Image (cartoon, helix red, strand yellow):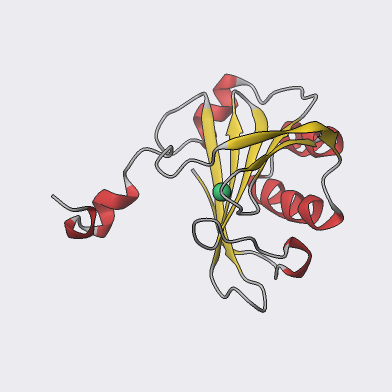
Length: 150
Ligand SMILES: [Zn+2]
């Protein structure tokens, strides 16, 4: 069966690692750009968890995506969100992974899907998807809309 034949609900239920970015470590971690930090703060703010919120202060970018998109891998000094709290936030009863999804746009790209992955209680990845290998200007991103936590 071709993926195009699947009903939308089935495609949405596919594991999160489909099309997963392939990371290339930076020579050394860098601070998030002002625009990345702003986006991070908005997404984390929608979760409304003070522990997660504190992680933004020490968030650092450790890798970029090889495909050419603007997704980044991140790290934080923590402390991590407790497993019980992760379970509460997860829509699928996972204590190890929560994702915050939203939509935004730039003047050049009207549909940019943003996903913040929280893995093992820590900020781990900020995906910016406007198409495979498509770089977006993070500085030009509009405020995200339709933010969901799952
Ligand atoms: Zn990529």
